[in-house]
Image 1 (cartoon, rainbow, N blue to C red):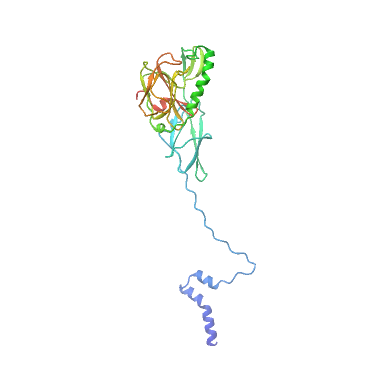
Image 2: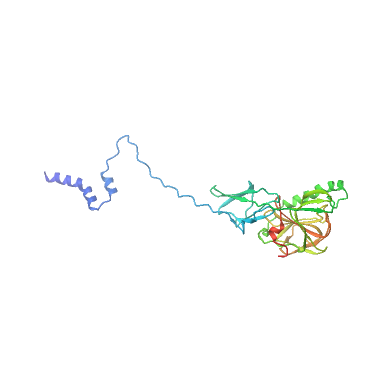
Length: 313
């Protein structure tokens, strides 16, 4: 073999020798040695980046015991991170800037409720809530069903306008953080009427009792159970409620104080927990001086004792 032929053969074999010696990577050797693809051959697979798995969804966080999910009760919690909407049984629920929310259950609420948070990427966190039933009593009331109206015709004439004022006040949606506070009783005394009780007025069945009655002498001051904004102050007594005061605590939660003798605040006033709001009386449909304290979240009527605890505590 001539010297020139030997050199050509040695140069052709050089990449394989370098691979064997560890001087060139196998990929580099394949680049050198791989023949071009045949005409008409399909190209090889194209590499792609696999997206990372979605982060696990956070659960709801509830304040206190889940036993608070009961008829006439409230439930406070915090939504999962990046929640963009919240619903309870399909109805929108407002969420505070810090993620806090409040939901509540009527005296006749269904045994189950469905809470759904939709997060930023469209996924959902679902909480199935069991609503514990309450036990309600029957109360015989020695007062006319029509309240302070002169007769049934007078009651039918006056009542629609009163109900319209109450509905308008409850639709104000005032801004307040009172709903976050531990509520206190507006006044302490003997409990004379209980939330949820079926009431019979001089033999005529009425609706269930929508609040709690506290019997105290006329003229006794009562205070705000939590921060809020006054949305109704009836200076002219209503047929049933008498001098009625409604305070909005925010997030759809309102307090109503019935049968007042005097009101010391007016619509639009911001009130602080413990502030005197007026005095107790017996205006409207009342058998004696007392404070009727009613709580409501949207259309759900609530038991004040479930927010304020045992009276006098």
